Image (cartoon, rainbow, N blue to C red):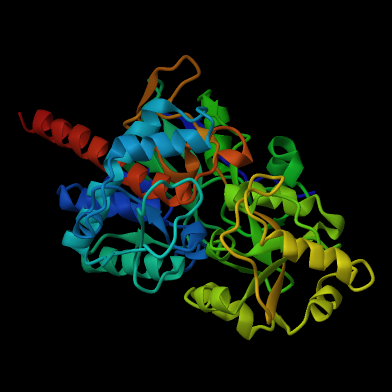
Length: 475
């Protein structure tokens, strides 16, 4: 049994705080740092509070890929895309169950946000155009040249440092202070030595991610993943939901999450799904395929966990190995001993199934990939696999949750009756996302889409309201 984090809401007319800022931001991941950079550009003071000694969060553990439309990088490639087309792809993956207004807001905001980060803060985006991720109709996935979430976090941190944005680390926010009119007046945070300190603020943005690292919440809200490996950050402790419940805020899509069916085991690394999209397959220990791999890596987590032993083998050939080696996460897994080479079908059978996999069954699986037309599950293969074969053992993992505080399109947190709280905003993993309420609704990149677009939208909202307040105070 895990212990629920201590998160509380207190009421007062004023807070006895050591310092004051216009905007306080809880969480120094992609969402919080994007918002901070955009506020800096607007001339609004902010302080970012981060629980860890070194900001990382879910962003650093991700691939660092962000889907966006209309960016200067995408336009330079002559790709015909639009926010409307992107929104349609998001809704198609979510079977129409994503929040329409939020889908539209994110799809429209993400391109300008990436361009602003590039033009003003030196994030040099590249477009991943070698393959299409599941559900995307065109090439719109952006990344930094290193193609890792860690490099994205490093770039955002460097930009924040260059802008002299205060990022207060080892500051675990436990208490939100509100007045009787539901206006946030400050927060309390705990230091490693146990001291509690306070920060007064004019507005607050929760950018503190979801609840995937809170085992009690996962058992309560995502029972199908209760026994799954958690591949996210331990800071995903459900703080935003706990504060939301205490405030009577509305929660949304708590059954939505990003799983991943390609978590390398036992090494504990992520293998790119591009290998599956370009012709690789997942086989269980009997040497059989068990789903259409091109439907998406999120729902694949549940499919893999349902197999004997909760594991599968990613099987591919030399040309796909070359593709896999373009991704640093795979290279690390290979260096750790995850990759198996099998020169014959018999060797592959012994590798993936030992006594469970017979050569005729495996051979039939491989032969079926060369058949003309769709497989029984609907997948169409352009070609079969050729020896030597390569195999990596994987399991299904929970990466991060997609449900959270219900927010308006401007990122204000909503009460149970749908009215907005006056100066409390949430974005990224703290807010309900655009994946609907089930694992299959997750479109590749939805997590960082919510983080970066949500952070940018929140900053614009806060800049407008804080600027208006300053103008009023000066008269």
